[in-house]
Length: 511
Image (cartoon, rainbow, N blue to C red; front, side, top):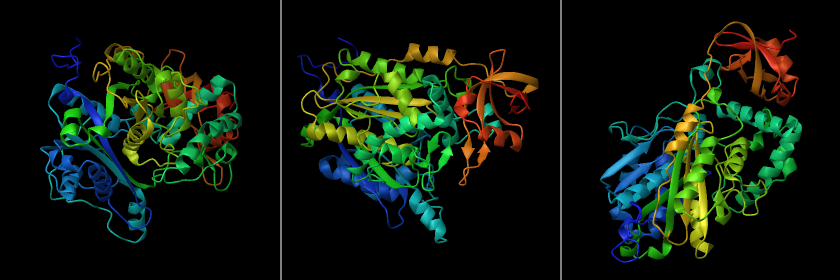
Protein backbone atom coordinates (compact mmCIF):
# COMPACT_ATOMS: atom_id res chain seq x y z
CA UNK A 1 0.00 0.00 0.00
CA UNK A 2 1.32 3.46 -0.86
CA UNK A 3 2.06 5.58 2.23
CA UNK A 4 -0.72 8.05 1.48
CA UNK A 5 -3.52 5.56 0.78
CA UNK A 6 -4.59 5.37 4.45
CA UNK A 7 -6.89 2.37 4.48
CA UNK A 8 -8.45 0.65 7.43
CA UNK A 9 -7.76 -3.01 8.13
CA UNK A 10 -10.44 -3.83 5.56
CA UNK A 11 -10.71 -2.48 2.03
CA UNK A 12 -12.42 0.80 2.94
CA UNK A 13 -10.65 4.13 3.06
CA UNK A 14 -10.11 5.63 6.51
CA UNK A 15 -12.66 8.46 6.43
CA UNK A 16 -10.65 10.49 8.94
CA UNK A 17 -7.95 10.72 6.21
CA UNK A 18 -10.21 11.47 3.22
CA UNK A 19 -10.23 15.22 2.39
CA UNK A 20 -13.38 16.76 0.90
CA UNK A 21 -14.80 20.15 0.02
CA UNK A 22 -18.14 20.11 1.79
CA UNK A 23 -19.36 23.68 1.22
CA UNK A 24 -18.61 26.86 -0.71
CA UNK A 25 -19.98 30.38 -0.43
CA UNK A 26 -19.72 33.48 -2.58
CA UNK A 27 -20.66 37.14 -2.14
CA UNK A 28 -20.85 40.22 -4.35
CA UNK A 29 -21.60 43.87 -3.62
CA UNK A 30 -22.38 46.49 -6.29
CA UNK A 31 -23.89 49.38 -4.31
CA UNK A 32 -22.86 50.20 -0.75
CA UNK A 33 -19.26 50.43 0.40
CA UNK A 34 -18.03 47.33 2.20
CA UNK A 35 -14.72 46.06 3.50
CA UNK A 36 -12.98 42.94 2.31
CA UNK A 37 -13.46 41.38 5.75
CA UNK A 38 -17.20 42.11 5.62
CA UNK A 39 -17.41 40.48 2.20
CA UNK A 40 -15.46 37.45 3.41
CA UNK A 41 -17.81 37.14 6.35
CA UNK A 42 -20.75 37.03 3.94
CA UNK A 43 -19.13 34.33 1.82
CA UNK A 44 -18.10 32.30 4.89
CA UNK A 45 -21.56 32.71 6.34
CA UNK A 46 -23.10 31.30 3.17
CA UNK A 47 -20.75 28.30 3.25
CA UNK A 48 -21.26 27.64 6.98
CA UNK A 49 -25.02 27.88 6.61
CA UNK A 50 -24.83 24.73 4.47
CA UNK A 51 -22.94 22.85 7.21
CA UNK A 52 -23.98 24.52 10.49
CA UNK A 53 -22.65 21.77 12.75
CA UNK A 54 -19.12 22.43 11.48
CA UNK A 55 -19.11 26.15 12.39
CA UNK A 56 -17.55 25.57 15.81
CA UNK A 57 -15.20 22.84 14.63
CA UNK A 58 -12.94 24.90 12.36
CA UNK A 59 -9.32 24.11 13.20
CA UNK A 60 -7.73 26.64 10.87
CA UNK A 61 -8.91 29.81 9.12
CA UNK A 62 -6.84 30.72 6.07
CA UNK A 63 -7.28 34.08 4.33
CA UNK A 64 -5.94 34.71 0.84
CA UNK A 65 -3.78 37.86 0.58
CA UNK A 66 -5.97 40.96 0.18
CA UNK A 67 -4.83 43.85 -2.03
CA UNK A 68 -7.17 46.45 -0.54
CA UNK A 69 -6.42 47.85 2.91
CA UNK A 70 -7.51 45.47 5.64
CA UNK A 71 -5.13 46.09 8.53
CA UNK A 72 -2.53 43.68 9.89
CA UNK A 73 -4.83 40.84 10.91
CA UNK A 74 -7.65 40.12 8.43
CA UNK A 75 -7.91 36.46 9.46
CA UNK A 76 -8.25 37.38 13.13
CA UNK A 77 -10.86 40.01 12.27
CA UNK A 78 -12.75 37.53 10.09
CA UNK A 79 -12.84 34.97 12.89
CA UNK A 80 -14.20 37.66 15.18
CA UNK A 81 -16.84 38.66 12.62
CA UNK A 82 -17.93 35.03 12.29
CA UNK A 83 -17.88 34.53 16.07
CA UNK A 84 -15.63 31.50 15.79
CA UNK A 85 -12.35 30.76 17.56
CA UNK A 86 -10.18 28.49 15.41
CA UNK A 87 -6.89 27.47 17.05
CA UNK A 88 -5.00 28.70 14.00
CA UNK A 89 -5.42 31.72 11.71
CA UNK A 90 -3.17 32.80 8.83
CA UNK A 91 -2.90 34.84 5.66
CA UNK A 92 -1.06 33.98 2.46
CA UNK A 93 1.54 35.80 0.43
CA UNK A 94 0.71 37.27 -2.96
CA UNK A 95 -0.36 34.88 -5.73
CA UNK A 96 -3.47 33.79 -7.59
CA UNK A 97 -2.27 30.22 -7.05
CA UNK A 98 -2.79 30.62 -3.29
CA UNK A 99 -6.38 29.31 -2.98
CA UNK A 100 -5.61 26.00 -4.69
CA UNK A 101 -2.30 25.80 -2.86
CA UNK A 102 -4.23 26.16 0.40
CA UNK A 103 -6.63 23.38 -0.61
CA UNK A 104 -3.71 21.11 -1.52
CA UNK A 105 -2.06 21.90 1.80
CA UNK A 106 -5.28 21.31 3.74
CA UNK A 107 -5.80 17.96 2.01
CA UNK A 108 -2.29 16.88 2.95
CA UNK A 109 -2.93 17.93 6.55
CA UNK A 110 -6.13 15.89 6.70
CA UNK A 111 -4.39 12.87 5.23
CA UNK A 112 -1.57 13.30 7.74
CA UNK A 113 -4.00 13.55 10.64
CA UNK A 114 -3.01 17.08 11.70
CA UNK A 115 -6.17 18.81 10.46
CA UNK A 116 -9.88 18.09 10.64
CA UNK A 117 -11.77 21.16 9.40
CA UNK A 118 -10.44 24.28 7.69
CA UNK A 119 -12.09 27.39 6.29
CA UNK A 120 -10.42 29.13 3.33
CA UNK A 121 -11.61 32.61 2.38
CA UNK A 122 -10.64 35.65 0.36
CA UNK A 123 -12.09 38.87 -0.99
CA UNK A 124 -11.38 42.16 -2.70
CA UNK A 125 -13.36 45.38 -2.24
CA UNK A 126 -11.70 47.57 -4.84
CA UNK A 127 -14.98 49.13 -6.00
CA UNK A 128 -15.69 50.14 -2.41
CA UNK A 129 -12.17 51.48 -1.94
CA UNK A 130 -12.58 53.70 -4.99
CA UNK A 131 -15.99 54.83 -3.78
CA UNK A 132 -14.52 55.81 -0.42
CA UNK A 133 -11.77 57.78 -2.10
CA UNK A 134 -14.30 59.60 -4.31
CA UNK A 135 -16.38 60.46 -1.24
CA UNK A 136 -13.39 61.62 0.79
CA UNK A 137 -13.76 58.79 3.30
CA UNK A 138 -10.82 57.06 5.04
CA UNK A 139 -9.35 54.21 3.03
CA UNK A 140 -7.24 52.75 5.85
CA UNK A 141 -9.41 49.96 7.26
CA UNK A 142 -8.98 47.23 9.80
CA UNK A 143 -8.07 47.04 13.46
CA UNK A 144 -4.53 48.35 13.64
CA UNK A 145 -4.30 47.45 17.33
CA UNK A 146 -4.05 43.77 16.46
CA UNK A 147 -0.76 42.00 15.93
CA UNK A 148 -0.17 40.68 12.41
CA UNK A 149 -1.57 37.32 11.41
CA UNK A 150 0.99 34.59 10.61
CA UNK A 151 1.91 34.52 6.91
CA UNK A 152 2.23 31.36 4.82
CA UNK A 153 3.39 30.81 1.26
CA UNK A 154 6.16 31.84 -1.09
CA UNK A 155 7.02 35.52 -0.68
CA UNK A 156 9.54 35.86 -3.53
CA UNK A 157 8.90 38.87 -5.82
CA UNK A 158 7.23 38.51 -9.19
CA UNK A 159 9.88 40.36 -11.18
CA UNK A 160 13.61 40.70 -10.86
CA UNK A 161 16.14 43.47 -11.27
CA UNK A 162 16.01 43.32 -15.07
CA UNK A 163 12.26 43.85 -15.29
CA UNK A 164 12.10 46.43 -12.50
CA UNK A 165 14.85 48.54 -14.07
CA UNK A 166 12.79 49.13 -17.22
CA UNK A 167 9.41 49.44 -15.49
CA UNK A 168 8.16 46.06 -16.65
CA UNK A 169 6.15 45.25 -13.53
CA UNK A 170 2.44 45.47 -14.44
CA UNK A 171 0.63 42.31 -15.59
CA UNK A 172 -1.07 44.23 -18.41
CA UNK A 173 2.39 44.93 -19.85
CA UNK A 174 3.97 41.50 -19.30
CA UNK A 175 1.23 39.14 -20.51
CA UNK A 176 1.05 40.80 -23.96
CA UNK A 177 4.75 39.96 -24.36
CA UNK A 178 3.82 36.29 -24.02
CA UNK A 179 0.99 36.83 -26.51
CA UNK A 180 3.39 38.18 -29.14
CA UNK A 181 5.30 34.90 -29.01
CA UNK A 182 2.11 32.90 -29.50
CA UNK A 183 0.95 35.09 -32.37
CA UNK A 184 4.34 34.96 -34.07
CA UNK A 185 4.51 31.19 -33.68
CA UNK A 186 1.09 30.88 -35.31
CA UNK A 187 2.10 33.18 -38.18
CA UNK A 188 -0.55 35.79 -37.35
CA UNK A 189 -0.48 39.57 -37.26
CA UNK A 190 -1.68 41.30 -34.09
CA UNK A 191 -5.03 42.03 -35.73
CA UNK A 192 -5.45 38.42 -36.86
CA UNK A 193 -4.47 37.12 -33.46
CA UNK A 194 -6.86 39.51 -31.75
CA UNK A 195 -9.75 37.93 -33.69
CA UNK A 196 -8.62 34.46 -32.60
CA UNK A 197 -8.55 35.63 -28.99
CA UNK A 198 -12.08 36.95 -29.40
CA UNK A 199 -13.22 33.50 -30.50
CA UNK A 200 -11.45 31.95 -27.52
CA UNK A 201 -13.06 34.28 -24.99
CA UNK A 202 -16.61 34.62 -26.30
CA UNK A 203 -17.73 31.33 -24.66
CA UNK A 204 -16.43 32.65 -21.34
CA UNK A 205 -18.97 35.47 -21.50
CA UNK A 206 -21.82 32.99 -21.96
CA UNK A 207 -20.84 31.35 -18.69
CA UNK A 208 -20.53 34.74 -16.96
CA UNK A 209 -23.97 35.75 -18.24
CA UNK A 210 -25.52 32.85 -16.31
CA UNK A 211 -23.48 33.35 -13.11
CA UNK A 212 -25.20 35.43 -10.39
CA UNK A 213 -21.81 36.30 -8.90
CA UNK A 214 -20.28 37.56 -12.16
CA UNK A 215 -19.36 41.24 -12.32
CA UNK A 216 -20.27 41.48 -16.03
CA UNK A 217 -23.14 39.00 -16.58
CA UNK A 218 -23.46 39.83 -20.27
CA UNK A 219 -22.83 37.62 -23.27
CA UNK A 220 -20.50 39.17 -25.84
CA UNK A 221 -19.68 38.17 -29.37
CA UNK A 222 -16.13 37.42 -30.47
CA UNK A 223 -16.27 40.51 -32.67
CA UNK A 224 -17.31 42.73 -29.77
CA UNK A 225 -14.41 41.46 -27.67
CA UNK A 226 -11.83 41.78 -30.44
CA UNK A 227 -12.82 45.00 -32.21
CA UNK A 228 -11.05 48.11 -30.90
CA UNK A 229 -13.23 51.14 -30.30
CA UNK A 230 -13.91 54.04 -27.95
CA UNK A 231 -15.35 51.70 -25.30
CA UNK A 232 -12.89 48.89 -26.02
CA UNK A 233 -9.55 50.53 -26.56
CA UNK A 234 -6.32 48.68 -27.13
CA UNK A 235 -4.59 48.77 -23.78
CA UNK A 236 -1.42 46.92 -24.68
CA UNK A 237 -0.99 45.19 -28.05
CA UNK A 238 -2.76 42.99 -28.94
CA UNK A 239 -5.17 43.21 -25.98
CA UNK A 240 -8.32 45.25 -25.95
CA UNK A 241 -9.86 46.27 -22.64
CA UNK A 242 -12.36 43.39 -22.81
CA UNK A 243 -9.54 40.85 -22.92
CA UNK A 244 -7.98 41.81 -19.58
CA UNK A 245 -8.82 40.74 -16.03
CA UNK A 246 -11.11 43.22 -14.28
CA UNK A 247 -9.82 44.20 -10.84
CA UNK A 248 -12.44 46.77 -9.84
CA UNK A 249 -14.97 44.44 -8.22
CA UNK A 250 -16.28 43.70 -4.74
CA UNK A 251 -16.32 39.89 -4.59
CA UNK A 252 -15.60 37.18 -2.02
CA UNK A 253 -15.55 33.40 -1.85
CA UNK A 254 -14.99 30.76 0.82
CA UNK A 255 -14.44 27.00 0.95
CA UNK A 256 -14.92 24.57 3.81
CA UNK A 257 -12.50 21.64 3.59
CA UNK A 258 -12.69 18.78 6.08
CA UNK A 259 -12.33 15.03 6.46
CA UNK A 260 -15.12 12.81 5.22
CA UNK A 261 -15.47 11.60 8.80
CA UNK A 262 -16.05 15.16 10.03
CA UNK A 263 -18.63 15.69 7.30
CA UNK A 264 -20.39 12.46 8.26
CA UNK A 265 -20.48 13.41 11.95
CA UNK A 266 -22.02 16.74 10.94
CA UNK A 267 -24.65 15.00 8.83
CA UNK A 268 -23.46 16.52 5.56
CA UNK A 269 -21.45 13.67 3.98
CA UNK A 270 -23.84 13.79 1.03
CA UNK A 271 -22.34 17.21 0.15
CA UNK A 272 -18.79 15.90 -0.05
CA UNK A 273 -16.75 16.60 -3.17
CA UNK A 274 -13.55 14.59 -2.94
CA UNK A 275 -10.09 16.07 -3.38
CA UNK A 276 -8.28 13.51 -5.51
CA UNK A 277 -4.91 15.18 -5.98
CA UNK A 278 -3.09 18.50 -5.96
CA UNK A 279 0.05 19.76 -7.67
CA UNK A 280 2.19 22.88 -7.33
CA UNK A 281 5.00 24.07 -9.59
CA UNK A 282 6.86 27.26 -10.48
CA UNK A 283 8.01 28.36 -13.92
CA UNK A 284 11.38 30.08 -14.25
CA UNK A 285 10.79 32.83 -11.71
CA UNK A 286 11.44 35.98 -13.77
CA UNK A 287 10.09 36.41 -17.32
CA UNK A 288 13.35 37.69 -18.81
CA UNK A 289 15.12 34.48 -17.77
CA UNK A 290 12.69 32.13 -19.49
CA UNK A 291 13.99 30.20 -22.49
CA UNK A 292 10.54 30.23 -24.15
CA UNK A 293 8.12 33.02 -23.27
CA UNK A 294 5.26 31.28 -25.04
CA UNK A 295 5.09 28.05 -23.05
CA UNK A 296 4.66 26.97 -19.43
CA UNK A 297 6.71 23.89 -18.59
CA UNK A 298 5.44 24.21 -15.01
CA UNK A 299 1.77 23.85 -15.95
CA UNK A 300 2.69 20.88 -18.12
CA UNK A 301 4.67 19.27 -15.28
CA UNK A 302 1.89 19.91 -12.75
CA UNK A 303 -0.75 18.44 -15.04
CA UNK A 304 1.27 15.36 -15.81
CA UNK A 305 2.08 14.81 -12.14
CA UNK A 306 -1.52 15.38 -11.11
CA UNK A 307 -2.87 12.61 -13.33
CA UNK A 308 0.09 10.34 -12.71
CA UNK A 309 -0.69 10.54 -8.98
CA UNK A 310 -4.23 9.21 -9.43
CA UNK A 311 -3.04 6.38 -11.67
CA UNK A 312 -5.73 6.10 -14.31
CA UNK A 313 -7.78 9.15 -15.29
CA UNK A 314 -6.37 11.71 -17.70
CA UNK A 315 -7.40 15.12 -18.96
CA UNK A 316 -9.94 13.53 -21.34
CA UNK A 317 -11.74 12.04 -18.32
CA UNK A 318 -12.33 15.41 -16.68
CA UNK A 319 -15.92 16.64 -16.89
CA UNK A 320 -15.67 20.15 -15.42
CA UNK A 321 -12.89 22.68 -16.02
CA UNK A 322 -11.87 26.06 -14.71
CA UNK A 323 -8.64 27.44 -16.15
CA UNK A 324 -7.10 30.60 -14.73
CA UNK A 325 -7.80 33.32 -17.27
CA UNK A 326 -6.34 36.66 -16.22
CA UNK A 327 -5.19 37.27 -19.79
CA UNK A 328 -5.59 35.22 -22.97
CA UNK A 329 -1.95 34.10 -23.05
CA UNK A 330 -2.42 32.41 -19.65
CA UNK A 331 -5.29 30.38 -21.09
CA UNK A 332 -3.46 29.55 -24.31
CA UNK A 333 -0.35 28.35 -22.51
CA UNK A 334 -2.48 26.21 -20.20
CA UNK A 335 -4.24 24.68 -23.20
CA UNK A 336 -0.93 23.74 -24.78
CA UNK A 337 0.47 22.41 -21.52
CA UNK A 338 -2.57 20.32 -20.60
CA UNK A 339 -3.40 19.07 -24.11
CA UNK A 340 -6.73 20.88 -24.45
CA UNK A 341 -8.30 22.47 -27.52
CA UNK A 342 -9.50 26.10 -27.50
CA UNK A 343 -13.00 24.94 -28.48
CA UNK A 344 -13.16 22.03 -26.02
CA UNK A 345 -16.88 21.19 -25.74
CA UNK A 346 -16.61 20.93 -21.95
CA UNK A 347 -15.87 24.65 -21.74
CA UNK A 348 -12.74 26.17 -20.25
CA UNK A 349 -14.33 28.10 -17.39
CA UNK A 350 -16.95 27.41 -14.73
CA UNK A 351 -17.19 31.04 -13.56
CA UNK A 352 -16.91 33.15 -16.71
CA UNK A 353 -13.23 34.02 -16.36
CA UNK A 354 -11.40 36.98 -14.87
CA UNK A 355 -12.30 39.54 -17.59
CA UNK A 356 -16.05 38.85 -17.24
CA UNK A 357 -16.68 37.10 -13.94
CA UNK A 358 -14.20 39.44 -12.31
CA UNK A 359 -10.65 39.23 -11.08
CA UNK A 360 -10.75 39.82 -7.32
CA UNK A 361 -7.03 40.06 -6.72
CA UNK A 362 -5.43 36.86 -5.49
CA UNK A 363 -8.76 35.23 -4.68
CA UNK A 364 -10.22 34.40 -8.11
CA UNK A 365 -9.30 30.72 -7.83
CA UNK A 366 -11.41 30.34 -4.68
CA UNK A 367 -14.38 31.25 -6.88
CA UNK A 368 -13.13 28.82 -9.52
CA UNK A 369 -12.92 25.94 -7.03
CA UNK A 370 -16.33 26.88 -5.62
CA UNK A 371 -17.84 26.75 -9.12
CA UNK A 372 -16.18 23.44 -10.00
CA UNK A 373 -17.17 21.75 -6.74
CA UNK A 374 -20.70 23.16 -6.88
CA UNK A 375 -21.12 21.73 -10.39
CA UNK A 376 -19.84 18.33 -9.28
CA UNK A 377 -22.08 18.42 -6.21
CA UNK A 378 -25.19 19.49 -8.11
CA UNK A 379 -25.05 17.34 -11.20
CA UNK A 380 -21.71 15.70 -11.79
CA UNK A 381 -23.05 12.19 -11.33
CA UNK A 382 -21.03 9.25 -10.01
CA UNK A 383 -17.41 9.28 -11.08
CA UNK A 384 -17.40 12.85 -12.43
CA UNK A 385 -14.12 14.77 -12.20
CA UNK A 386 -13.29 18.46 -12.09
CA UNK A 387 -10.05 20.37 -12.62
CA UNK A 388 -9.29 23.85 -11.24
CA UNK A 389 -6.08 25.75 -11.90
CA UNK A 390 -4.58 28.76 -10.16
CA UNK A 391 -1.78 31.02 -11.24
CA UNK A 392 0.34 33.67 -9.55
CA UNK A 393 2.40 36.56 -10.86
CA UNK A 394 3.31 36.23 -14.57
CA UNK A 395 2.46 32.61 -15.44
CA UNK A 396 4.89 31.93 -12.60
CA UNK A 397 3.43 30.09 -9.59
CA UNK A 398 0.93 27.32 -10.32
CA UNK A 399 -1.42 25.15 -8.31
CA UNK A 400 -3.77 22.54 -9.79
CA UNK A 401 -6.47 20.51 -8.09
CA UNK A 402 -8.37 17.43 -9.22
CA UNK A 403 -11.80 16.90 -7.64
CA UNK A 404 -14.33 14.11 -7.89
CA UNK A 405 -17.96 13.43 -7.08
CA UNK A 406 -16.89 9.96 -5.88
CA UNK A 407 -14.02 8.94 -3.58
CA UNK A 408 -10.62 8.43 -5.21
CA UNK A 409 -9.84 4.70 -5.30
CA UNK A 410 -6.52 5.14 -3.52
CA UNK A 411 -7.34 8.17 -1.40
CA UNK A 412 -5.88 11.64 -1.84
CA UNK A 413 -2.49 11.48 -3.50
CA UNK A 414 -0.32 14.61 -3.69
CA UNK A 415 1.50 14.98 -6.99
CA UNK A 416 5.28 14.75 -7.00
CA UNK A 417 6.83 17.47 -9.16
CA UNK A 418 10.31 17.41 -7.60
CA UNK A 419 12.28 16.22 -10.63
CA UNK A 420 10.34 18.36 -13.07
CA UNK A 421 10.85 21.43 -10.87
CA UNK A 422 14.60 20.88 -10.81
CA UNK A 423 14.66 20.69 -14.61
CA UNK A 424 12.60 23.88 -14.93
CA UNK A 425 14.87 25.74 -12.52
CA UNK A 426 17.95 24.56 -14.43
CA UNK A 427 16.54 25.88 -17.73
CA UNK A 428 16.77 29.54 -16.70
CA UNK A 429 18.67 31.74 -19.12
CA UNK A 430 21.28 34.16 -17.81
CA UNK A 431 19.99 37.74 -17.73
CA UNK A 432 21.97 40.87 -18.54
CA UNK A 433 21.02 44.02 -16.64
CA UNK A 434 23.42 46.21 -18.59
CA UNK A 435 25.03 46.13 -22.02
CA UNK A 436 28.17 48.34 -22.01
CA UNK A 437 28.50 48.64 -25.78
CA UNK A 438 25.85 48.86 -28.48
CA UNK A 439 25.02 45.26 -29.37
CA UNK A 440 22.60 43.68 -31.81
CA UNK A 441 20.03 41.51 -30.06
CA UNK A 442 17.17 39.39 -31.40
CA UNK A 443 13.70 40.22 -30.15
CA UNK A 444 12.03 37.30 -28.37
CA UNK A 445 8.83 39.11 -27.35
CA UNK A 446 7.39 42.57 -27.94
CA UNK A 447 4.38 44.76 -27.24
CA UNK A 448 3.21 48.36 -27.51
CA UNK A 449 1.51 50.14 -24.62
CA UNK A 450 -1.18 52.62 -25.72
CA UNK A 451 -2.93 55.49 -23.99
CA UNK A 452 -6.63 56.37 -24.16
CA UNK A 453 -6.11 58.10 -27.49
CA UNK A 454 -4.28 55.15 -29.03
CA UNK A 455 -0.82 56.74 -28.95
CA UNK A 456 2.16 54.57 -28.08
CA UNK A 457 3.49 55.35 -24.60
CA UNK A 458 5.83 52.39 -24.27
CA UNK A 459 7.26 49.52 -26.30
CA UNK A 460 9.04 46.99 -24.06
CA UNK A 461 10.74 43.96 -25.54
CA UNK A 462 12.68 40.98 -24.26
CA UNK A 463 15.64 40.21 -26.49
CA UNK A 464 18.47 37.71 -26.72
CA UNK A 465 22.07 38.84 -27.01
CA UNK A 466 24.61 37.03 -29.20
CA UNK A 467 26.16 35.40 -26.12
CA UNK A 468 22.81 33.83 -25.19
CA UNK A 469 21.92 36.15 -22.33
CA UNK A 470 18.53 37.86 -22.41
CA UNK A 471 17.60 41.46 -21.63
CA UNK A 472 14.45 43.36 -20.81
CA UNK A 473 14.64 46.65 -22.61
CA UNK A 474 12.62 49.70 -23.62
CA UNK A 475 13.11 52.31 -26.36
CA UNK A 476 15.99 54.72 -26.01
CA UNK A 477 13.71 57.75 -26.53
CA UNK A 478 10.17 58.84 -27.43
CA UNK A 479 11.00 58.91 -31.11
CA UNK A 480 11.81 55.18 -31.07
CA UNK A 481 8.64 54.52 -29.06
CA UNK A 482 6.59 56.29 -31.73
CA UNK A 483 8.46 54.44 -34.49
CA UNK A 484 7.82 51.05 -32.89
CA UNK A 485 4.26 52.09 -32.08
CA UNK A 486 3.59 52.46 -35.81
CA UNK A 487 4.66 48.84 -36.35
CA UNK A 488 2.92 45.58 -35.57
CA UNK A 489 4.83 44.37 -32.49
CA UNK A 490 4.36 40.75 -33.56
CA UNK A 491 6.47 41.60 -36.60
CA UNK A 492 9.28 42.62 -34.28
CA UNK A 493 9.60 39.10 -32.90
CA UNK A 494 12.63 37.53 -34.52
CA UNK A 495 13.98 40.89 -35.74
CA UNK A 496 17.08 42.61 -34.49
CA UNK A 497 17.33 45.71 -32.32
CA UNK A 498 20.41 47.52 -31.07
CA UNK A 499 20.72 47.46 -27.28
CA UNK A 500 23.02 49.45 -25.01
CA UNK A 501 23.22 50.86 -21.51
CA UNK A 502 22.25 49.92 -18.02
CA UNK A 503 19.35 49.56 -17.76
CA UNK A 504 19.36 48.49 -21.41
CA UNK A 505 17.62 50.70 -23.99
CA UNK A 506 17.08 49.82 -27.63
CA UNK A 507 16.70 51.38 -31.05
CA UNK A 508 15.91 49.90 -34.43
CA UNK A 509 19.01 49.07 -36.50
CA UNK A 510 18.34 51.60 -39.24
CA UNK A 511 18.30 54.59 -36.89
